[in-house]
Length: 156
Image (tube, rainbow, N blue to C red; front, top):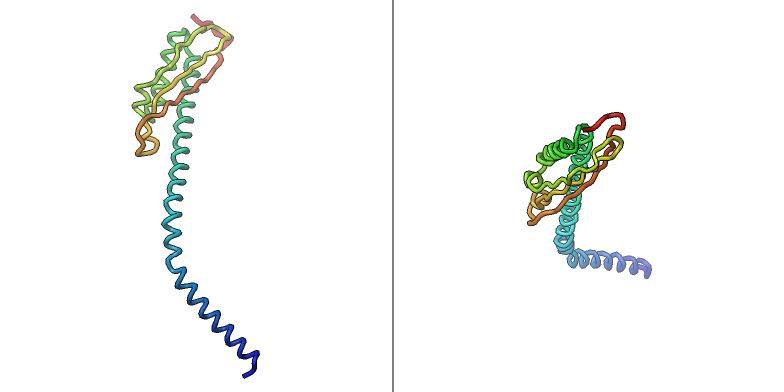
């Protein structure tokens, strides 16, 4: 056997031994990585889900306030506008949370005359358990929407 052949044979043997040693040392590394990464992944997914749920709650409440302002502009008096806005908003929030309906606060509508604007401002309290499943406490949601009154209509 030549010197070159001997060197090649030793290199092959060294690679084989190195591969065996490497697999013995790295045998549990994958399970340790999973134990560390999986909880972090679940926490990130839970946060994404939670913030998405908060965005949905806020968007639904905004839509309810918008509908309430539009319903108020169809009324003839300020008192009727307030009643219409409150009823519309209660209907919109009752689908999402009874507790929100119970804590709903709609500000009175002032200056109800032709060419003016009706502004509906409301807030309510959503239970965190409805949004995140297990968290205690509540989150306040508020929104404001302005809608113009018809300039060609006489208001009493």
